[in-house]
Length: 518
Image (tube, rainbow, N blue to C red; front, side):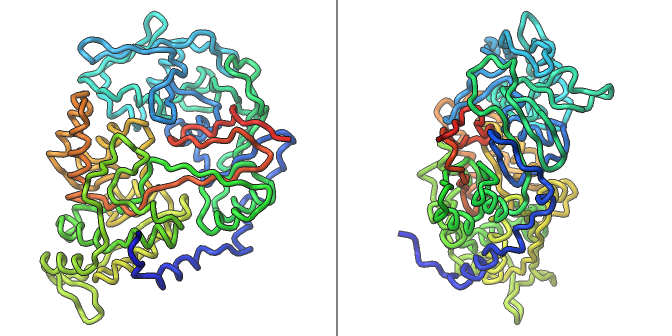
């Protein structure tokens, strides 16, 4: 049984901030959208198309099945063929060969060949992204395959080629300067019209030689407010509405013509801390902050599901990394205040702590792309006050987090980290927790034991899973980031659609498997 919530009044007040009002339903830019044609599946989500570059908006074009990557994964995270029909590894584990599927064409009729695939991958390699982690020394086309030569073995390399930033486009998609000017993919749907940053329409590609989809056309619309997305589902303006807030979910549960589907995802909402901050470099302080977070209350009152309270960084949805035997994170404000006293802090008359003539105050930056984040930030603000830390919450854009990480100005950020960006998260973890950390992971923090464990995972020397257990234990002990809650994706589905399923790795909306119901 979950413990009695200690901050019930707080959570009730925070939740009241999320109650929908008519004023929020007028989403900017939504009023001038032309209704979709009959037979079109309309998808709404919070994500804007910030450009055509795969590294920025590629995930939208792979989710809508316009573009493909070399490889895909199933719901268990196992590698599956996509543009590559098969692959092999050399005996020294430094050379991967990906054999390109025969008979595929791009939407402009150009054949998909090893050479056209190579051009897209070389562009991805030259841009910031997951391939930068691979240590690729050479890449070339030979005998209908793309060959990747590594400086050192990297066991999860194939998973990097499931990432949207490595999506493959036709040669005509690029301008003379090498930039993407058009999206010409090879998936079952092709771009019909596109209007940045809000909307694009797709239609079935008549040259598709895979299983024939029943849905002939689809539309994606970026709608920033969660309550607006819910209203569009309620009024049948949207067939699939993603990333709903808890009040909207409760309202839609009683709405005829709409059903809700939910799927646990390998994503964790966490506090990212700047370990170079004069106070946050002390592990005792980070542990005290963790002890001050009432995860059960946040999960139960704000997300309406106590099972989402994070007991460790890796959620159960990430089965190979989740450690059931790890001592769970807990809420204990008394122990938190004791640790802070041991670290040399003393309270002033207002209860806020001081040390060395400096008040313990932090700026917490979060963003609205995921509607629960500002609510969770508000709850954490009060919980930190109760242990003597003054937190100012700043709600901005998701880009503020990586910008603050790189400039060093970020003190604390509340983010939702997706560990399924590549279904084997080894490369993600290397980017987040080695060399001082990454945009969505640790910041100015080093741990040689963890880095060695990740290096062994990368080389493939962890058949028994011991290194994953070491990684989880080190992060639990040192807390360079502080897990708060795990994540469950809830989608509002129109009653006219069948065959709906949620991709646990968020790679696809699976438009091609949908069916119209009578």
